[in-house]
Length: 136
Image (cartoon, rainbow, N blue to C red; front, top):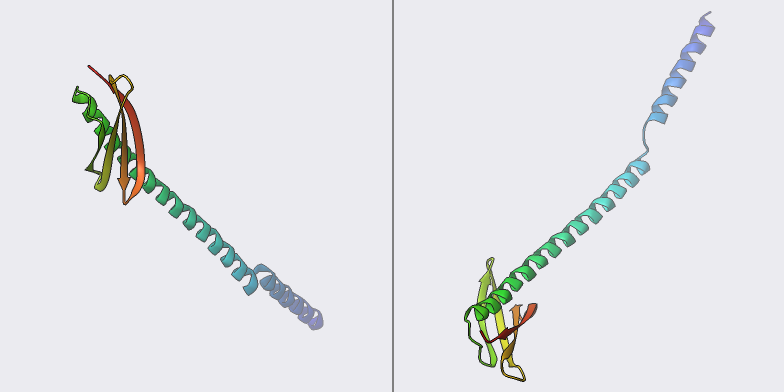
């Protein structure tokens, strides 16, 4: 009976050892999993960074459009036809400085003016708006 008891004990120990080996991960498997997670996190960070840059660019363009639109509206509110030619002035919106350039062209009959407003920041054109003004 002791031979049978010893054999059973040996079999139980072997079964326990094989379960211990089968339930864990090898070092290679862990390293591959960590590398995959690192690649996924790097891709997510790049996408997030790109999204932030796009939002900042959209903000700058929107503020430039406000500057150009304000210039055109101020000419409309003056209720007189502006003189032909060009002029420029500084505009500050949302903590950013823009240069707004206004160009006024005569119409063939002289009753209208074609007005172009262009807002630039750091020598880069951010927005262009145009309108036609008539006599009131």
